[in-house]
Amino acid sequence: CGIRNSTIRSLAAPDITVKRVPASYDYGKDTADGIFVGGGPGDPTSCEKTIATLRAALEKNIPVFATGQGAVVLAIAAGAAPYRMPNGHRASSVPVIDLANGRCYLTSQNHGYGVRDESLPSGWEVTFLNDEDRSIEGFASAKGRFVGVLFHPEGYPGPHDTDFLFGNFLEIVRNGEARA
Image (tube, rainbow, N blue to C red; front, side, top):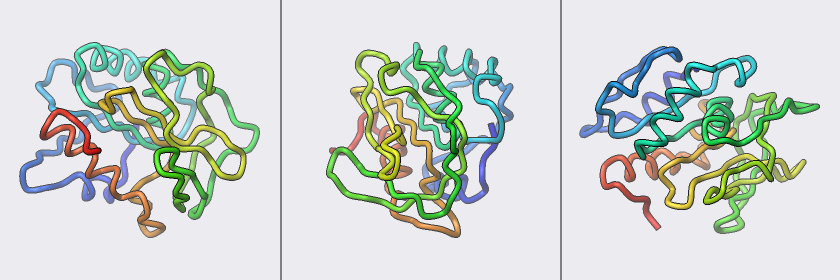
């Protein structure tokens, strides 16, 4: 779905191998320990092949972390309903509220689609809200194995407030569970 080189740098670690593949790639055949879905331009509902392969990954319980429009693709794969926003979020300092701790983070964003609150599947919860329009900016499954944020955590050259999300994903990939 598209990925920034800064995202690959954020995921790279001595004990991690990052394999970059196109959106049409069927990673269900691989023995991946985790899947990262970046966000590219366009309508996420048109990513039918990616949605189908993500559904298979969810069924296999493979950890998935998705950002930007990739988060909307993940939400669709999980059964949630997307919508075209009247005004997309396109800026380098968009405030989002972390519902776990009440902190406000400045984020880099460039998305025109969102996820309807009421459509998240049972066992999934909203994790971040946009502080300006109260739309969903993040969500996760109850066990934290599937996480989506509609912003760009690495945000280069912008804010780095949410870099910790990459560490959380890598912790799940390494150990099978999220940090508290």
